Length: 349
Ligand code: KG4
Ligand code: ZN
Image (tube, rainbow, N blue to C red):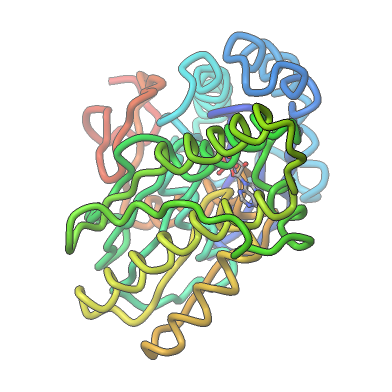
């Protein structure tokens, strides 16, 4: 018997709902982006994001069912991102999912947003064998995670300051490129020479799998200030390419080192920055030399979307890991942690 899950994702600035069968067959994946609303502020404004989610959520959920060609009674469960993320934004999705769960007496599955990013890989290859190393690189997180079985996460490295996506966004903003910065820098870099401008790479202590990108960000900003003081023109494509190479070199080297040290031969990539063309190509090139395999989702499944939440929810459904109707938004939820009590299949106890 197949399991049909409706998933809702509203942790940041995308309002998304998806219908996925058995964790990998995507019947619909509706993403309503708020990027136009936030780009004029150069970043996500939390209060504006919550209000927009509230306006959009019912339409997006209805659209996900219509596009999937199903009705509410065809569902087996409803899943929702309950953290980490912006608390007001998360609350909209959590409230909508709880209402659907209560109204239709459907089990409720609470999903960690980062777990969702990781499971975007299972949408494209449901039977990926463990153990795995996953590089999770998004606007809010940069983590290297060792995964030995479904639902078990050991974070072996994390950023000590800016997340990789945050560094892309801040550098793009400083360069006057716009928001979000990752795709813009990715595109501009193709016209630049990554070796033209010398920028630092923070490898930290020997053997550490942690990351640091704030020094690199400052180096780019200082480079622009010095050029402005001299009245010199800067080559933006070279600067973008140099910055991107400095970020991706460290991400690739540490991921491969972590895989080798833990004896893992499958590497997953997840999160918005995993859409980066130079990161993908560089990771494959280096992994191949170490006889490692690299798996990553297509770009639309790397950035925030509800299909990835449905995939993570499917594996929780199989483990009977359901949330109670007291489920709340948890803005600082950690990977592998649950912040609700018991296992209530959507019932209030
Ligand atoms: O995973 P995501 O959609 O949202 C969060 O959970 O944060 O990631 C968004 C981040 C943004 O910082 C964006 O600039 C970055 O992913 N991003 C990219 C690319 N596409 C999106 N960064 C580098 N290259 C890209 N092609
Ligand atoms: Zn995300």
